[in-house]
Image 1 (cartoon, helix red, strand yellow):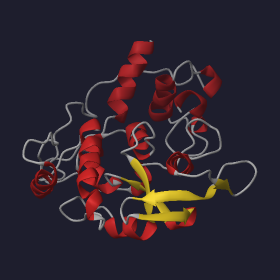
Image 2: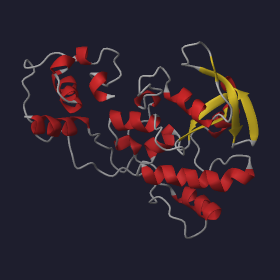
Image 3: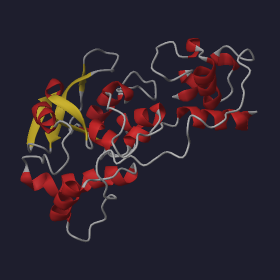
Length: 253
């Protein structure tokens, strides 16, 4: 039964990607952030601020949840910033760029994991707020940090993130990356944005039947995949009380 549930979950949550005409429209809310994965009251933004400050950080309250001060070397400008409100946590490869480079095929959980990835210091970085918003969703062919001394390192980090997450790069992007890193650099696979590889799993495939009356509450679920199946197949919204698409968060976070 557990195997059937897992198979059903994969069939239900795998995105069916559009054809070569394009990919599903990017929706920022699909890449849920920021989350507190380890439940220590510090969401991913504040975890990054703590990790990257070169001096002890100050918190808004004694609970130690929200960082308000510290000392951060902003690589985009080359300046040091002490006020946390002047910083954004930048997705090195912006969410929209990731979406159009292959992330559109991810399910909601992988999108969430990408948007909150603390496992690799290349993925999330504390930077000058104004420069991050200037960057927007631009790739290296459209935007590079004004701090020229950092541009090659920026390109290396960009490539590292794309390779880790299996994302592609378009022709102009590849050209700029080769200029910065050299002709022999290991680069992402080249493909035009939203080139739309077809997903072999289709919503038309038959799926295993689930007895929706068998289980009703998170306490009845033994694994996260099982909770996801009951949420999606049976429509049990009580498993997802905050409506973020993640059921039974004690199991699934």
